[in-house]
Length: 470
Image (cartoon, rainbow, N blue to C red; front, side, top):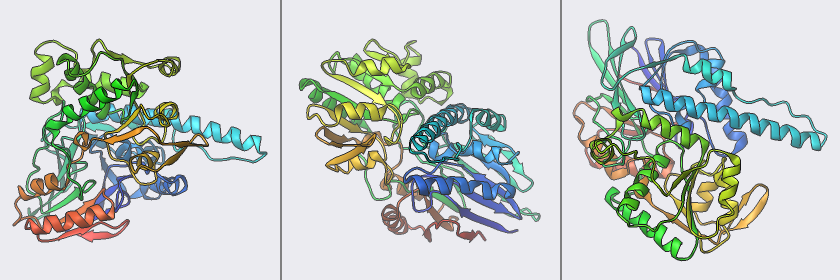
């Protein structure tokens, strides 16, 4: 039996997750994410997906985030006709994210064409995919509940385990059986979450693998305790409100926005923050919240106890205002006095958040609250690195607002949590850990931590390199 693993995305970087498991010539793709960052480099890597279409026999999506699902419509548009396996909640959220991406691409291309026409230049690029392509790709999804076994290839059985990262997120565990019934287990964590996160359940342990493909986003950092997240959030809201300022929060429309709303609801109920308006200014976040409401099977016991049993809506309360239209979004800027504004994109690369940053980033009474990972070369990374000036819409803006990061909100496990997870596996059976979805310095640190825990071999995966699994 020949089993090979390789990656063509999220290799020594934190975007564009795309991994492959090949079993006797049968190729299974795990995730098909979009690269984000430098425009030319990202576009080249995203379009390279087309080169591998003919090899793929099955596809698995671990969760809905854009850097894991964003190029699935290009995959199917380019000729992939097989199944895409995921949990039901992941399918629903991915459909929303992919459709939003199609609309953004169309707007961007239209804008670039107009700019080129003004200069008397030609512009012949087209979006990666359109709305029709998203609809077609969603028709190829086959949903699978957690821990339910399913053969997705003659020798390969798939089970999905809770990853605790976002609603519906999963770890993909493969049992590969040879003709003489020998078994090899390979597990992909996808993005691994943290214990005691709001709304969703904790990550669960996969069945003991021979090989583990492990994310390493925060392989060199420790997060604050999740119990402290509410107190830190309250401090930011209170101190900013006292100065009459606004708290602007770049947040992913899926999971992070709903988590923030959940915490702000609790803080409001407990009278720990003042009675100020709180805006969710993201059409996609509003639609994602509706999806959260129809998947209570993914909620943890705390959410069940706090809201479901008491017939409350965890995503709605008096101070909270959803602003779906452009006009409503613009009206937020005319508000005098304190407010909290949650808007996407989470890395500040697109969306309404950039318009709110233009209005607030150069005023010292305001706070830019960072609650998630910012990839290299993104506007969000420049802000979190406290660069004195940043460029938005062709102009430079001085960063005078307070920049505050709360890592306790991270949906990714830190290096201590990753090490604890791995150490609970059967290390006698575990032959090797492959590190993906992390930058080199994070992977170097995590590698040593895992070796110190008794893992026999750890390797950072290189883009396109093949690894034979004995």
